[in-house]
Length: 358
Image 1 (cartoon, rainbow, N blue to C red):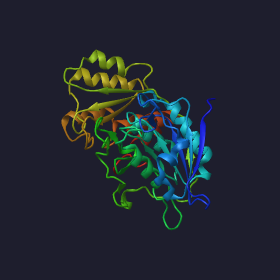
Image 2 (image 1 turned 60 degrees about the vertical axis):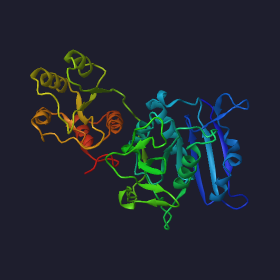
Image 3 (image 1 turned 180 degrees about the vertical axis):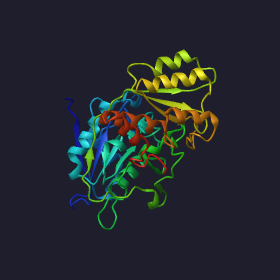
């Protein structure tokens, strides 16, 4: 087992803290700074947090930072990492008011979606954040993203319930539902957007929450963590002239238990008889086929056009307005439950964690 560095930061001393927040630093741009020579970026030393971010003293928090080993570029994230983070949060769940995960931006939407499915009956916030420029840069987005994510993770209603009992992404002054976001920008600070669901909060002079869009607290049900993922999910993005032999290689590959089919517009696909026979062949081979739109926004409406009606008729499932990231991680999660086939198909269509607009 890797040995992780643990640093305690108490901004409330000598008073008792009004909130406890656990931070998992997994890697990514946010937690970088220049070495003394000013030439190279190296991991930020979180023992210097109050020196570098003195404004945190205004919060009166106790912050525990666990720096995971090894630090990861987010391109290297796997389901095994999601399982590790979920286990750490489960172990410390009772002791903290909220959790912040510092993560690289490239696959943050996948990780936030995955953890949203892993935590059932969540009563505390798990906030993903990161940055486009490291905390060591003179001009950066890392400071505001980290500080506001910590603040939201600790916020409560007057009755003591967490303000946002969800897995979320906070970035560039917006709080989004974690299984609704997509990375849309690689150079500007507004790296994420949620095409089919409104933001949960916006940070300006004060943080304004949109309560009607935030998931309600579960009714006295115990929190459960589901850690089993089956990554046997493939992705096929349609394009005009795509050779059927390439599609067949993916659809009928023995390692693929489910395939996300990225179709056009509101879920349309070719009506070519050979293409449809290939889909039927995959379904007969006990594959799950899930139809997701290539469009940035909108939803799959199978049957709205002749070119999607046949998909519905042969048994291709509609992802409705799920993101590709949510569709892939939801399938991994459901395959990991090893449910009977019909139950799995029912759960795909069910809105489990706010990933589908019903």
